[in-house]
Length: 53
Image 1 (cartoon, one colour):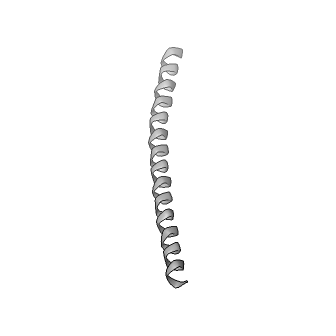
Image 2: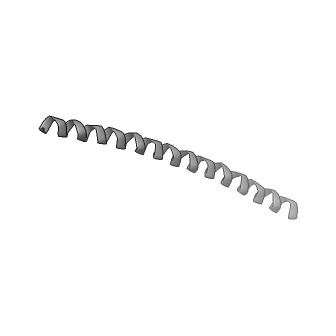
Image 3: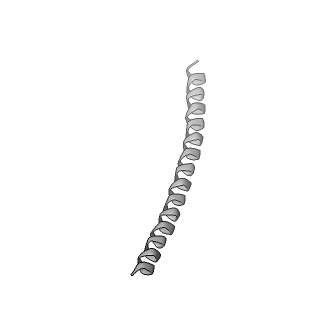
């Protein structure tokens, strides 16, 4: 029984690690997307300042 519980716990831990890895990858992708979007907006602001000066 003790071994079965340990195996079951390991199985749940491995499943949790896989799910967390997917979540972290998704968040990293989102942060990268937001970073690129911010750079685009900053460049547009610079262009507007240049145009109006």
